Length: 402
Image (tube, one colour):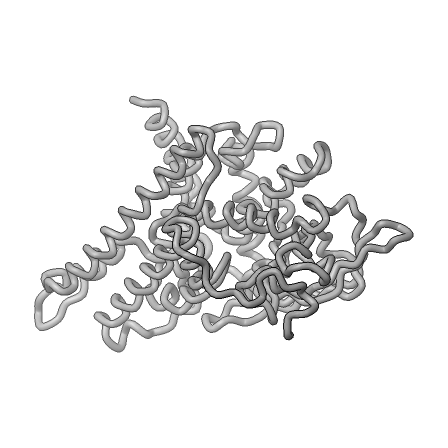
């Protein structure tokens, strides 16, 4: 038995011992507040068992293991529908990027609080006027020459879990007189500070985990800056690479291939199981092949990381293809169910219901960079193709028509 096999067996045993208390069935019928509290209890149990921050350094509350152990645990954990979504953004990007840039002490306290589910962070990137073009954001950060503090004014949108967050990371325009990519600065912000207003946005599926956030003269000290003044775009790109790389589920958090096979075996038409139809088998097999390729790409990225290199653009491929693949399979499984395929279940999750998965897939295609942005990344950074025509390239931001 290899060390990794032993790790997988131990992790699986611990996870299965928690299913009755924290799994999918235990969450049915809970209110949002009750489900969040269940999630906090699960994260505390996970931290105390040594399965939190698996690939983080030990000095930051992690386990000091490799990304391979993390992936191994994630793939076992995702099978059971534990209440982890409230903390996925927090532990996926804001806390890791905070750990890279802030001095020791305070950052370790925040990291451990986040790992235990006691605190939540959000990521304040998207804006109404900027879309997926992060460099076009308009939230302003002006430095007070007397105190050195920064004053934030502006609006963010589509901020996941901001209504629950204690802290957030934010990119703001600190110099509109230079090219748009060079005039940005990156900070962390207290989400309970005076002047911060959070308003939930209800999505098509009825949930409201995304928010619009307003900043009205919110003062933050210069010590809350991450990276150099004017260097915010680079820090943001570093954060997004972590985000895209953190996607470990080839099913993109939708129902699994095994679920598709089981449903197609159970459902019948004219007395025959749908799985006996070659067209159904072809669609499921095509999806399986795509997921297998995504798993291989992710595995290669992990091995590269273990060899000491930084994650590259593989995450862009994984995010782009996996969410599209989930949307296509969900649509197909709805179609073959006929009218019953569009029956709505408010208690269902995107992981165990085809209609919910299909209806929520578009948000996955926007979060962390829309499809069009990812296609540009793949074209330019992986395929080496020429850049798109960019008439605003090199133009000072305040000279670009609004």
